[in-house]
Image (cartoon, rainbow, N blue to C red):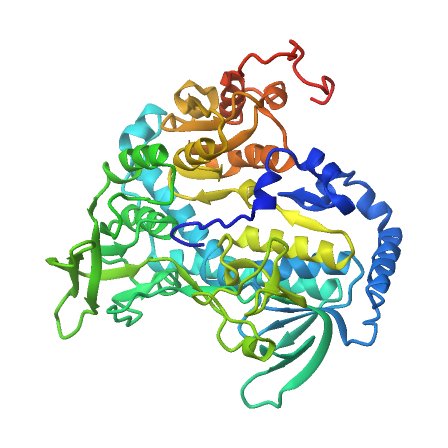
Length: 566
């Protein structure tokens, strides 16, 4: 989770967009390029029935590379993963499925940032804010014939809900790995040499193990700019905010990306006034501009939220001795002092920084870039000379390609595919992102400015079509008609370049689009898919049907080259 999702896609990965199947056929060695697990291109039902056969294949593939899967081949493990967050967990489960003897090292608690201090507890708080927001909307309730009087909340009960959810998911992740035979090793992992890892915790002797392959999956921590003093009570990061130890009357949120926007939803629903402090000239800079503009109209303007854009929080001093939190704002360009805010609390939501210190990368000639571990398109770690470090990979926030929990898991699965002898490249532009406000925002692929920039460079046209939730029966039945879906595509080929949604359950709706990009499905094919009525999914159904293709010589009137596929 972070304020702005940063995507870094290599040339070959970019070339794979919109053509995973055909591209795989053209690549030497049968390289698969996909936004999903490799099995998405085969028959999923074969995975269970043919598990013994797959294990034999995996062992044979590993033996070809000098090791026997499941036996270590002279190593303690086929795979050691440093970090038991969502990325490490996903890699571990897939590794066991492929017959690899696997261990995972965790110095804190299983689940990492997402489960313990990020995605999971924040969704519990957002679930509460959604209920509160609805109960307080008298007009909305009356329009549905409902009467509610004096809705309230218990702060500690809300906090307990978030904590209990994190504990439950953490336990589920731990039990799933233990049940499949993953060794969970407690301690801080350090790479001490080629295929060697040392781990241990304070008060106990360190242990050293060997592994044919190592995955770094250490995640990230909140980024706190210079000049900001964190006390954890009145000036804090998302790590502290998720504990919900207080609900301030007035809180400043520094940063208006995913993290800041979600917390503004929580705090305003619970009665706080919010002030955004954003360094860039517009709010929500990581979103498609059109979606951001509409989101501001729906999520910010009607609520007790004001904002300052184009300014830095140069210095933030916690509240003490009866004085409020002081925030000194300076112009982002001129650095001149603008004003000083006095608020009850300040949440620092300025993104996240990789947690890679102490990994021992200097022992293998690897130099981080702004803290990120450099990797290639296959997540292989690169050394200071630009060479691939054999048998060493890095996934998730630690490599900075796309700082999302599910991206880390997808990268981990991709790495395991490679370790098992099946070359695999992940298309990061097929990975969706979501902001769980009310209503939600989701996206996949390119924004409109990114798509037009790409079109200018490569010489093709871009078309845009949009549909409204106001025309959707299910949304109207819920009295939730605010929102749009936006499709960015190539009219000459039908390639889907990006999809952006603001509206009810947008985070659930986006996957039809992300899967289409991952599998190379074009608009001329997906527009014939059937959607249940009345459902919110018809928002996307209408979106794809609205796309118009350019007449092209040789194109016939048939809907698809695979007319029975839908």
